[in-house]
Amino acid sequence: MAGLLDRLAELLQEARENRGLSLRSAAEQIGYSRSTLGRIEAGEVCRVDIAAAVLRWLGTPGPQDPKEVEHG
Image 1: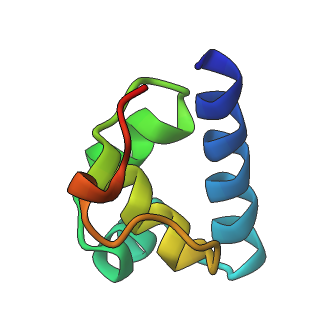
Image 2: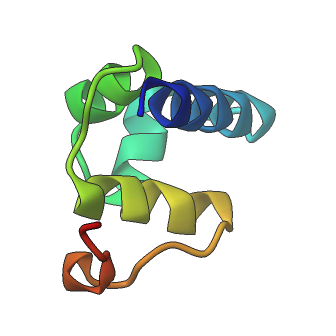
Image 3: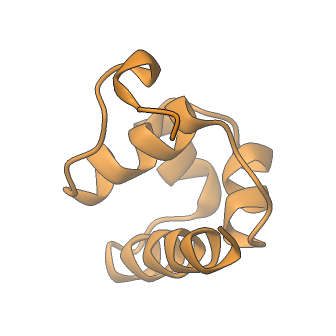
């Protein structure tokens, strides 16, 4: 799981910087707080719905609804 969180953190920060966005601006676009995105960029655990919103913002398909995620 840590590898996935690290990759999400890396992708978020990379995309945000490439788009010339502050953490606050990216957070407004994604729909979550600046502190939430800061925690993601720090590699901290986040809820599935937040990760899905970040993935959609990145242009990567993610679950539209947390219920779509299968728990193995």
